[in-house]
Amino acid sequence: MKIVQTRFIASLTNNQLTAIVLAGGQSSRMGEDKALIPIQGIPMLQRVCSIAQACADTVYVVTPWPERYQHLLLPGCQFIPETPISPSSSSHGPLVGFSQGLAQVQTDWVLLLACDLPNLKVEVLQEWIARLDTVGDDAIAALAHHAKGWEPLCGFYRRRCLPQLLEFINQGGRSFQQWLKQHSVQVLPVLEPEMLFNCNTPEDLAGNE
Ligand SMILES: Nc1nc2c(ncn2[C@@H]2O[C@H](COP(=O)(O)OP(=O)(O)OP(=O)(O)O)[C@@H](O)[C@H]2O)c(=O)[nH]1
Ligand SMILES: [Mg+2]
Image (cartoon, rainbow, N blue to C red; front, top):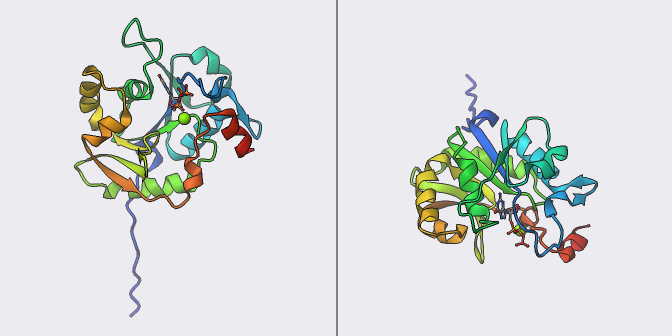
């Protein structure tokens, strides 16, 4: 008798994961809005959204400027217009933007992506997604790690971390690294570090062409 062993890998399907793309930074180092800069003819925000769509059925773009990006929104992607948390702050940073996106999420896990990641690879993200079911219950996130800390804007968060996140923000916290230090986070393996390349300056842009 032949015994066939099937290796069953439990994995989330696209409708069990939401993606949030952040597009609300000042781009002060770049000197122009990074989200709109074309890489191989496609604006960075649009590139990231199409990768996000390959991973999740629901894709939100959190931004204070939906009108600015309306023309490049892919069908199926939705804006979450960001609101200032204090009248004096024009930009409150990615952590607050993320919290406003997370508040709309219905799935257990969220893929969070910055809009300035021109080298993302769907296959690597899919591989990470396949691991999410094995992440310990105590972990609020699953992220890549490097010498300077976590890679917070290309990784996964549990929806249920929202109350802790809001508490941190209400106490004045604005740093992902500081927030993550307070919690258990699962490390994701980085086999292709170039996919995390972050395009912040004109030199980064020139080097990536
Ligand atoms: N929604 C939202 N996204 C933000 C905010 N601040 C930064 N981001 C996004 O977070 C990601 C990482 O931003 P950074 O590269 O650190 O910085 P930046 O503010 O865009 O640019 P710099 O001014 O050069 O630091 C990018 O996708 C930004 O668009 C914010 O206040 N709201
Ligand atoms: Mg950046």
